[in-house]
Image 1 (cartoon, rainbow, N blue to C red):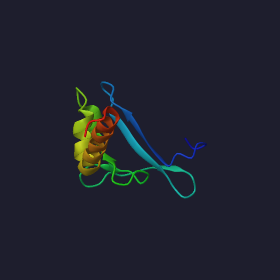
Image 2 (spheres, rainbow, N blue to C red; image 1 turned 90 degrees about the vertical axis):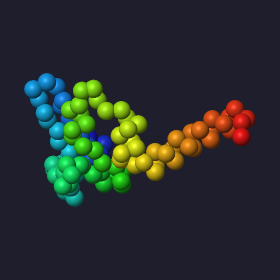
Image 3 (cartoon, one colour; image 1 turned 135 degrees about the vertical axis):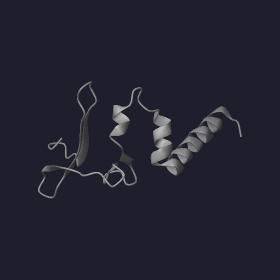
Length: 96
């Protein structure tokens, strides 16, 4: 990751009897340091402003629905993306 210039990444291991989750961000000197969650146990991205995750999502069985998570994280952006996809499909099919 360092050679590719990755600024932050998540390491999650949700195997049975393991509960490892680490959110790492590169500092000014190039070292990766652990990031602390906010008071609601969420980790916020600096690379993707407005994006955040909760480690508990990786521990659920079954895993949560992706659309439900997107609606929790960024409802306006996700709904706009869906509307744009619908509009593009209608335009391709010639429907108004």
